[in-house]
Length: 298
Image (cartoon, rainbow, N blue to C red; front, side, top):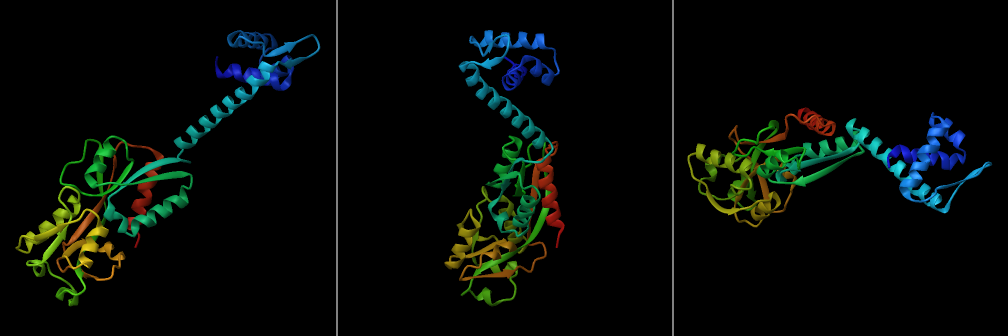
């Protein structure tokens, strides 16, 4: 049974006249009658009662008509959905985001803009560590990733593009002597208890901090590790140490925490866009265009 057989049947069922149905289908009447007979034989039931004056549906025909219409409608909807998705009108995009990137005001702004301009595209936003995002992009679980550059080469076909470079700041307990300074030099932290990201989870922030300490001539005294920015700042508020975090983390105005600029000019961390270089999906291209536009805006 093919879709055309269903169309033939529905035309006859709606016209209740083989001649009119044939005209509607732009075909001759005898082949139409032959196709309907073949359909009845395949089903094993008569769908129409025919006499010299009229045609009408049997009970089996009435039941079949309901389902035939539903199948044809579903097929039409599937066709239109595929065409729309191919044209980028609606669909779904999977976006991976490292946790600290959510504090970057540019990202929420980009998501709002994309949602406004592509209202029929669902954004599947997934929090994911940077290294995991690279694997998910390679496996096509993600379409776009926003991550901090890990200490490894991306998988074949996955491209990294610098998106946004943010200054690093020192999150200091309010009662600490450094909280009274306008800015903090890395050398000021030589003897301080530091809270850092673990190497395996926060590579994109772990290495910049380690390098800044090395350039200032000291080995950091790490007393705590935290995977989540909110937990890290909470540890600072509790007076358990000082953390070096992206400037955008200041949006967490937690009582007991003072954010201080770091004087070193290279105290910064970069967020990257990651995507499959050969991917021409229109939703992916639209998301990347939106993210790039937001990054270049003031």
